[in-house]
Amino acid sequence: MSAVKRLQRELHQLWSALRATPWVTAAPLDADTAAGLLEWHCDVLLGDAPQARRLHVVLRFPDAYPAQPPRVHLHTPFPHPNVLPDGTVCLSVLEAG
Image 1 (cartoon, rainbow, N blue to C red):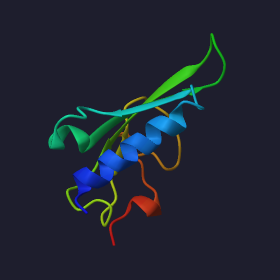
Image 2 (cartoon, helix red, strand yellow):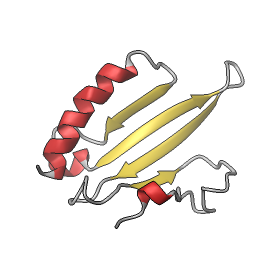
Image 3 (cartoon, helix red, strand yellow):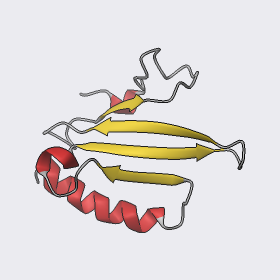
């Protein structure tokens, strides 16, 4: 199955699941194009209003997805041992191989 077909299927599953989680939003850059499906933007709200903090995350899926993992980049500064200074998220599950 191609990465685009897999991501289309996962997009529909995700949208169903996100109805129950209003503190998370996620969508491809453009659900109508193959290139747009390979880049997703997600927002996660941490904490309660009015002090809630929004984390913006970008996932870039390779053409070989799911055999190769996406690259995950945090665009909101967030100090964490698994987040590099440039926002790259480092987890063993995100390593190819």
